[in-house]
Length: 508
Image (cartoon, rainbow, N blue to C red):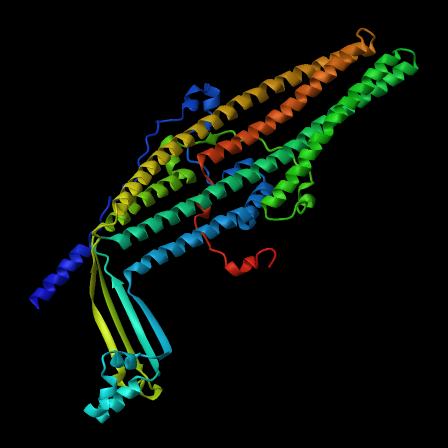
């Protein structure tokens, strides 16, 4: 009994170990603050602060319609549903890997007709013809065995490989890390979806805003044409002024269709992002709304929290964890494996005696498999696993650097495009004043109509560029929020869909 207890304790002790390195949480090196915030002026710093980021950042645009579009996209977007199904597959891989902890039991039923070939064996040794002279009863018994027989058998086979070196545990650890990577892929897709819906919606409102601005300029050009026509009829202006005014109007009208096309394309893009047919949201989006103002303050957090917030960084860390655990799987293959195997069944050539206990058979015993020579494959497997881990380490570092770069670039674009918009606003104000002065001088006959046309052209260009700059600043803000990685936190709970809702594949 003492020996059994000691052996059991030893087995438990061995079973508690797992070969290979244990994963240590990554600690990326990040600066104390974003470089671009230190370079900004005092006024700009007041707009960029290191406060907590709103996980529903799109609400900073104060648009109930945008909020509704994003919520519906999260529920119905087809690309996001694909990412969720990948999580379902990863979860099943954990269950599959965990099955190695338990015995494998199989049942079988068979009915076969056999010819043992005993008569040939007896004849080959010159025994068969002599059986009658030796023992008639033995001859009769052996004669029955030389005929084909029906053999019925039912059995259970069981096999259980003990996890002595933690191979199964490392496989489960690898599967769990890959599941986390799949979750982060879904989170990354979620962040991208939110940003894309916001970007396309801003493009829609921006295109509508530019169309409205251009329409104002067209109305002004049309009034100028009417004025020159009136003056020409009165003999106060030459026909050249009329033709120049008409050309100015046609030039502005020619620019309008491209922004109307952008408006329609944005509507179609939003419909597809929500998993609907192009044009399904036209009635909802056709009502023109002004471009929302930018928030007074934008919180960007600090770089040290970026690695915890960006899904792509979290995915790279999960892949590093999986690669580390996979080393243990490959190392465990270098050691002997111990399995317990057993078989129990019933066998008889008569079905009415098949359930008789005397027809049972069984076998049970341990089996040790020792890798003696594998041509270097097992050692190479360990080296490959270590190389993959090294690659995962470098990939993680590169992902962190890319994340920092994305934020810095987004901050640069947001700051500089706001500066451009402010300068264009001042330019438009000056050109508006210049147009009013030129028009007044033309009416009084002090200046030529070319001065009016030039002022109109410059003002139209400035207003168009200003409207485009406002759109670009809004899109830059969306890119900044996307680079910061927020937006997945309120949706951490992943509800796996019912596979049956997807129906059959196209074509049957």
